[in-house]
Image (tube, rainbow, N blue to C red; front, side, top):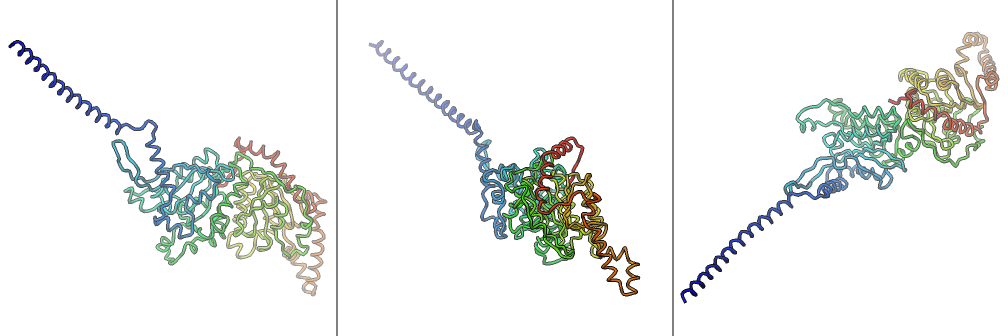
Length: 582
């Protein structure tokens, strides 16, 4: 009996021990499981997703902030109150739909919030105030840089200068046109930069080196002033091959009214007074005037359509529905037989070139000269003419500057030039002397003789003096035709007879016959100046019927593109010729 009790007691003890052991074991395993769970949770919190979705989410967030205007931000409100488009609205208005690919889309100043170990999220973002990238303009790829005036007025302390320099270098490397929409200082200096950096810097203009390369390589630089272009912003747009200003919102100056007031004591100046379109579209600083931003963009599209991607290429040729042999009988009578009467030279241009293709550059300045771009048989050409309706067509300093600029543009862009010449010479008189007419006339002569793009002359009426000789004779052999209305010589008869026959006329005056003798001399000279006599001596190669001018010009232009253009491109590639714009 005692044995049975001992056995039962032993069995109960074993069961109790087993239960305790089980309890201990369960407790230990529970702690281990809890530790394992905690470790797993910690691992999950520190382990980054394999698909980098966290980084992609951050980029998407920043891009969304940059692409969404802050309607309450004072910079954006000010932009709209001024009647200006926001920077991304401008990009959408200029480029073909859905073609913009931004470069540096998340560059700017970000405030980050830590959400977990090795994890953070952006809570605020101020984008760089210069938006840059690539896109298409009527199917052609271009690089684009556009100022965001709503962020620090485009100053450097809201920008990334590296972006600007990078895109300028990229244009050189890729041989792509650059369009610059300037509204502000384009990353120009601000005194706040000194405060934020803690030191003052030397104001190097780093983007200008690649810009000069672009200009001379014939990589189109096209700029629009769509707000106040200040300092560096002004310099960037003025340096372009072509520039245009929006009349309603554009202005350009070296420094704004407040800085001017402190330096020159000129008080109360508005943007328009200091550098609006009536200042800079009439003095040659800016080429063209547009009514608004949209018209600026359209002018840029038109100009780009005439130009190659770089001087390594031929200008783009398009199909032409205007017959190349189209005649215009009205051209026979457009030049008045009475020499003192004027006519509209633009009528000749629009009659000869492809219908609707004439695009004038600089119509509001240098008005003694007319220049622009057009097409003949679909081939882009430069057009030069003199304007007899302004100063009788005598070429003044501003007119010479305008033609110098156009000649360089055509040379770097491989555009052949058609000239409709009616030039009585350089302007004369006290105003002409005070404005350095001969200085700028000689600069024009240098440009004629140092450029190499082919030139074809149509002598419509007068070709006199140094100006006439320079414009006619800069190419060898000279390629030209004349109209029956042509006149030429060292001096026009008006004044020329007085100088050459001064003594004879003075003697005739003593006997009361000066007017009679003058009329006799004039009649004789006019007879001898019959253009047919010049053609008899092969002084002019050919006199054509004015109605055939389009056919002649189209034939010459077609030959240039089919034959001479290939040779020109080869010479540029080999370094034999080096056209320069800058």
